[in-house]
Length: 362
Image 1 (tube, one colour):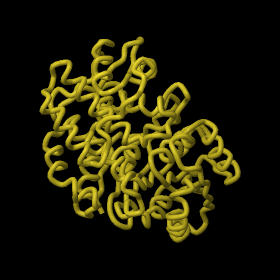
Image 2 (tube, rainbow, N blue to C red; image 1 turned 45 degrees about the vertical axis):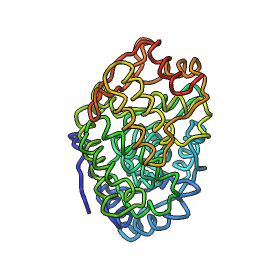
Image 3 (cartoon, rainbow, N blue to C red; image 1 turned 90 degrees about the vertical axis):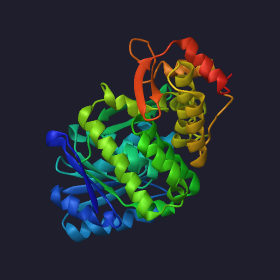
Image 4 (tube, rainbow, N blue to C red; image 1 turned 30 degrees about the vertical axis):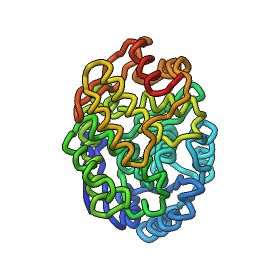
């Protein structure tokens, strides 16, 4: 079992990565001295793993009351209506201030559970058990929680750190190839934003990674978690360095919003958005066309879309004005200064529109 610590003073917590991590949840519940537990999952993950989590908790903590609430599966359900479903389940379970929630699922479940935990009785603890590659390498770590509004993605939320993260790479074997590829969009992001050696590692090992080779998967997940933990330690509330983790996301979030949060998975939108960020970086003179081609090739090797065309550029720009990185009406983008180096800065609207047109947006 690999252990990585997210160092945040009194809010520090461990990430445990390894086969059998789900069996450790009972020990974590006992360590945290919880009185009651609510497992939040969805209709896809619940039937696969909820009973295993329950058995672990009941074995380690036979006197703890435990309940499960299942949400429908999909980004389109990441809203306040389904936060209410979680909170109603908390009422039924009788959660008190010594209780905790367990997020058992992908990024949507993790974000929603953390947000609900941040609100229940003004904040109770929660544990992340991410079951998708995207959640394991990114969204389960760092404490960003929230839900979407029709106006934009993740506009409502809170910074609420988990008390531990339990990552079992074996659960990825129940994912289909599309979900695995979607998670790889967040993996390659870590390379392009700040680690050119990691980009090379991914280029050399992508076939093994897509086949979920245990050695490669564990190394890649651990590397991403270490990078995320370091960035979160430096900038917990995204006032500077942490914003770089949004490479490709400004375009990607616009894709999701303009297609109703249903046509494309988050990782697919981010992958196309990363290529668009590379195109914008090239148009601003930071990187070369060969660098853009390198981004495209790695995105393609992940089985992800290099281009999502047909979106109205004017509507997309309006969506971007509501992005969380926008300050005083100025849209800021994560740009590549080179392969493995990034910067967050404002960009003239004309340059952004030109990049969108070049990438097939009307």
